[in-house]
Image (cartoon, rainbow, N blue to C red; front, side):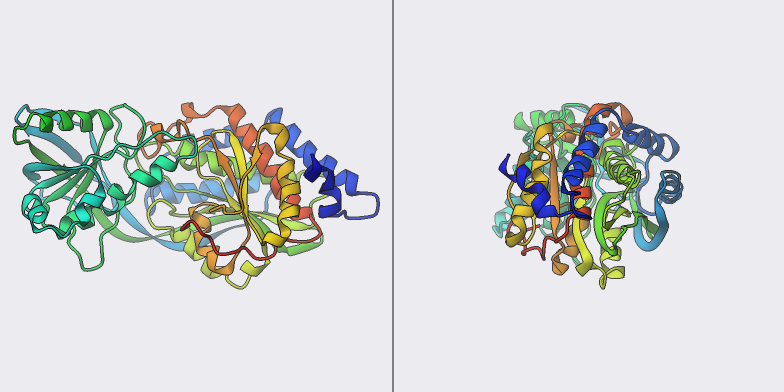
Amino acid sequence: MRALALLPLLLGAAAPGSAQDFQATASALRDEALKGTRAFEIVRSITTEVGPRSAGSAGDARAVEWGVRTMKALGFQNVRAETVTVPHWDRGAESGEIVSPWPQPVHLAALGGSVGTPAAGIEAEVVQVPDVSALESTDPALAARVKGRIVFIDRRMERRKNGQGYGEAVGGRSRGAALAGKLGAAAVLIRSVGTDNNRTPHTGGMRYEDGGPRIPAAALSNPDADLLEGQLASGKPVVFRLRLGARLVGDAGSANVIGEIPGREKPDEVVLLGCHLDSWDLGTGAVDDGAGCAIMMEAARRIGELKQRPRRTVRVVLFANEEFGLSGARGYAEAHAKELPKHILAGESDFGSGRVWQISSRVDPGTLPAFDAIAALLAPIGVERGDNEAGGGADLSPMIPARVPVAGLYQDGTEYFDWHHTSNDTLDKIDPKDLDQNVAAWAAVAYGAAEMQGDFGRAPEPTRGE
């Protein structure tokens, strides 16, 4: 309660006697959002009217049009689409089957960026490894065992509220093909980086090394990974046939969509609320990241409807191509490089629609009392104060060199990776009340940062590898 009591003193007021009004306004934004918002309707709109929107696709172009149209309809000003170039990858047709010892078809999905197989596919014996780190060995015996075979990376993801299990398992997806290719493997299969037991494989981005071998890579649904694991456990040689029609089409045009609630006194100073507009092609991009876009757009819209707007500008950025290379984030950081020192605070919502349970920061340590005071506004809605090492989200990472201060509102990700990057990423997975709680949290934080008299200085360099 001490931080909350300090709020008027730390944040200041527009005129004498208005400090109490500031606290009342921030609290009202929070409490009114809990009664109901338009966030769910915004997610419904993008999933219904656009659907899948992988970078460079026709859906991506429709998403940009949707973003501009919707921002204008919601009352944002200075709405524009800032063009960026994105890679366009297409998965094509795909299939997989265990050929022997006991033939069975499986459900799989090519990893984003993978090359395809020959038209007839690749048929080879499977070699199982427990984790991607096993492929980093320089043991000649490993290369002899892997050469010409299909490597199966059998790393299970652990379910965690904070999503930490994802970071521990995702290396097989991102680096597996590059490492196995160096050892002479014909292709890579991974156990899906997900926590569900549905026959819905999880796609996601992977990368090759410049000048290195490029072999096909796909993710098995977790039940099919169990099936393959069981056949391997028999001790009999297991042969698999993989067919992928994946290909990199080439570069394409896309855009970051931007809308603003201009500040009344310091319109050149910016509080940035980000999300990413693109999605993978399998689902409709509801939880990743339609929910995040709806949360940020609705939070800013509600600030814009106040009788008196905050001192600073609240800017919403729907970033292009987060999933396949951060093209939009890099483009924004480059295009706005001179402006980044006047970004007072930035945050991103990109973890589905689960309720916010913790707020962290990355601000000048000397300004922590001011951030603590804003964070205290969220205590009544069940949000605890975290540390000062927030990452903020992938789309904010290109702003790290400019030391833009960051707010991280961490959501409950217990179920997020059941649907992440799958055909099950659809609207029915979202609870409207959870969205409203997110809007309440972000509206209070964004308003606090936009209205405060001082600022958060420059952020320290991250210490956790963001």
